[in-house]
Image (cartoon, rainbow, N blue to C red; front, side, top):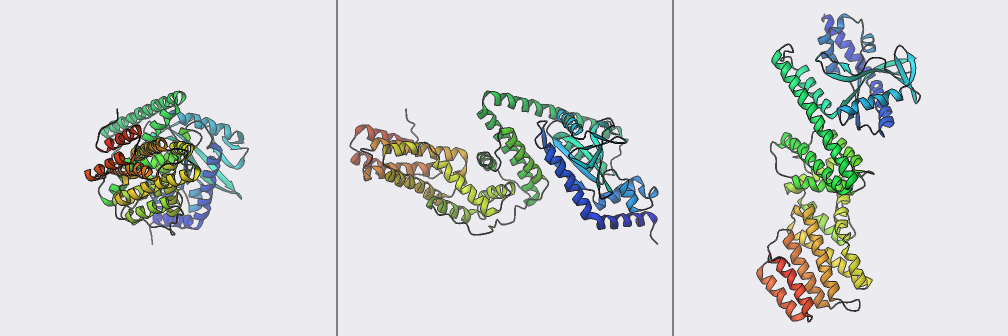
Length: 497
């Protein structure tokens, strides 16, 4: 015969298994209600998490608190367990906790008796709001912890609602996983207590520093939105790097430097509609929420990247770029890292995300304002032909080199600068909406060498000598000839005056 304690635990486990679907449904229902009604708050709301207490956690709780002595059966025990379901509202700063609690009280404003209140939006959810908040825990620290219940078809399922700032979420993880779960720690030990107090104070200081940074960002926003966006991008790139560096270390045991790739990923996210909101703060919160989710997942950096279907592009630029990257994605670790991280952050399938990124890269060049100048100086058909030649040069140069720096922001800007310079040369050499074919070839050759140089290729001196001869023999106008030679000097490292 089993000991009573193990019989009790067995009955609780069986009851949980039998009713797991209902408990999960209740957990999702509660989470959705709070998410729907708190999402648009300005009080620093970030995210909502919910969970049904696991069977191993219940076993530990029963043993730790001797619940088997007080309840006759599993149903009675779970009916009296206040945190069978846990719901946590996450916010940015400690001061936001109070604001969100006030919003919750305004939402649950119909008194149901015995300290419980419901919302006019849903009478099936009740919260006990007469108790003083925040509560003081045994360790002396404060927490917003509210008892609640979900009532459906006469059955009551208890849940506990917590409101926690980012640093208090982190503190909760420390307390629960390192201290509460570790029986080797003696809570009565003065040294341990002092260390805990010190950690909590440091976290409170970090919270205050983050609040100061946020306030500073808000001031920047009032003065110059571009400064604010730049600062937010730098912060997001740093967080992205730190999260995935940790995941890489856990997965394969070592790290490499991929900071510039993180910069490019963040730049891509904030320039596209998948994450971009009406203001930078909203965009940052969305990305941080996704990064927080990834922080809880396992990321395998040894698994090959696969696509769900064939990647097909109709234009030549995208086809060349995509085929080259596909050939490198599982053989060049920097390319692999870039897309492994991007695919983890984006929620679509790999093929869609890959195509979206290639289109983004193409648009970074197509969006160059110099093309408007080109169409102003040459006819439309010739303008289209020249534009396609410029894009093809970029694609073929990348195809021959394959360096990941091609998608880094500084290189994209440098190539776009060379696009502008090439179009300046072409426009200066145009007459009556046209340009001599040989002269056009020279300008495109200069552009070609500049792009190769930007991508890290070494340009042979003989190539430069050859193009200089062509300039002197083909371009009759002294001003245009000298202008062309200035761009050749850039290849030699000689800056224009």
